[in-house]
Amino acid sequence: MSEQIVHILAFESSCDDTSVAVVRARPTDQIPELLAWSVQSQFDVHSKFGGVVPELASRSHLMNLLPCLEKVLSESKCPLSEIDAFAATHRPGLIGCLLIGHTAAKTLSFLFQKPLLSCHHIESHLMSVALDGDPKFPFLAAVVSGGHTSLFILESWDEIREVGVTLDDALGEAFDKGAKLLGFGFQGGAAIDAAAKNGREDRIPFGKVNVPEFNFSFSGLKSELQRAVQRKPDGVSPEDFAASFQRALLDHLFQKMQRALESFQLKRIAIVGGVARNSLLRQRLENWKERGVIEDWYAPRPELCTDNAAMVGVKAFRKWKRNEVSTLADDVHSTSRPAVARRPR
Ligand code: KG4
Ligand code: ZN
Image (cartoon, rainbow, N blue to C red):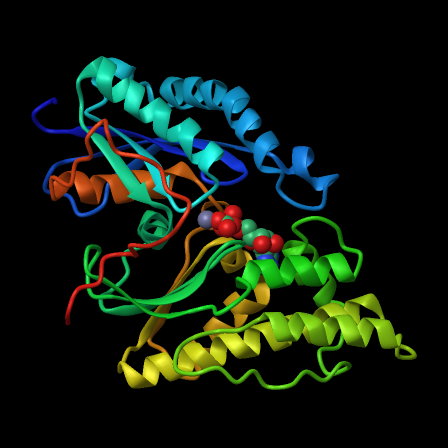
């Protein structure tokens, strides 16, 4: 390791995005600087099947990983010999997919005799807000992605507590299922977001979701949408369906976020994960800020909301600082648990 600067090379391949990044920091820094990152989406591979096909996803990671790696090494001007640690997502995700990025990191770690840092995908998403801002602790964080929906409290970058989780579908999954029902295609969260701008959100009534504490349930809203679509109500456009459904999903999210803010006496919120790109979600947080409900809110730039290795680089640096190094015997896991670090307040 050079004396002053630490370089970490990070891989993300837990689902259908292949991503590589190089971050750099002084050992005393809290958060590293992003030197270069690259992502290769597999949208075209899976869209014709209407969902991610695990076998095709693993093969695509194999094809995409080396071109992504070459790109970031060249853009960062940091040769492999100057990398001080190698990092990759090791859970949760599709096993065949996780294995590609994790094996790449392991192999490089072995070859260059540098530490291996295995990172939790959700913890990495939480770190993504650090790439584009300097959030003030403590804050509530909503991970809202295609595969996960949870609420966390962050006391610091390393003190993270999960306080709520979805009991069925993830928020992004609900957007995607709704988009499919409305004929908007694969991973249609962004299409619902766009269509909703031209629709009326009061055209289709949705019931209030009732689940305990800070947990979520989105699958009932999807069933309500399905029934409404089947009824074919007169004069209701696809845009009206999109706007009404999006409002119902976000109402549920905001109801739980408000409850958590009040219960834990928090004044700031971060949103991360693919759904954090949603324009109405961002607008409603801005409205909360203007009305003084919250002091501030944080989100990464849209392209760092979805899966990427830059966030893995941040998590890896936090692990490097704490000497939480993995051994080459470390494995990949499909499940999220044992979960994100839970520490008493
Ligand atoms: O974070 P991500 O790559 O998924 C997981 O790691 O699981 O996010 C993908 C998800 C998809 O469900 C996609 O429909 C959703 O993010 N998404 C959106 C928007 N852009 C992406 N959902 C709502 N509004 C958007 N603008
Ligand atoms: Zn993700």
